[in-house]
Length: 154
Image (tube, rainbow, N blue to C red; front, side):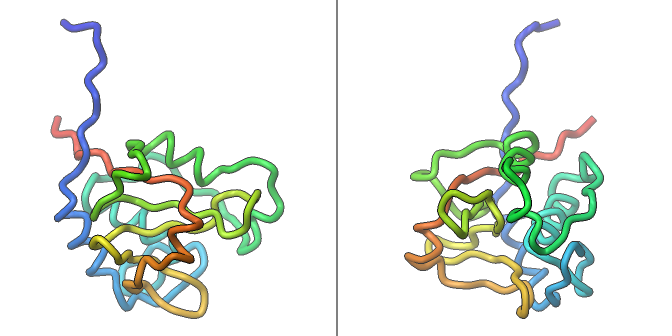
């Protein structure tokens, strides 16, 4: 028996992108993660996790639309660091999870999944899950990049 911990491998980016694209058109619904019925940005990532990795590792507590403005910590970033695999921002690629800090100095409030070199899939209020241009505006707010872990086969 080896005492060294195995380094988790990333999930297949093709599977991630295919899963995320299926969610396109799902209406925006705060706190939801129901394919075709409603999702917010976290709900999209949770749905892709279920499809590609398996059961979610934790239950998500209720959160208000302004939850980030009411906190001093950075819970979305902390959760990503706990459950996803960190990637250098310069190495971002299709299939990676992108985290954004909308206001300088505030907590991470938005996330999406990179779908091609210059596009990403996300959900935001007043819209639906959609694929958009990863413009300079979004890239300037990119805080962290992560990969989904590969599903462990027992």
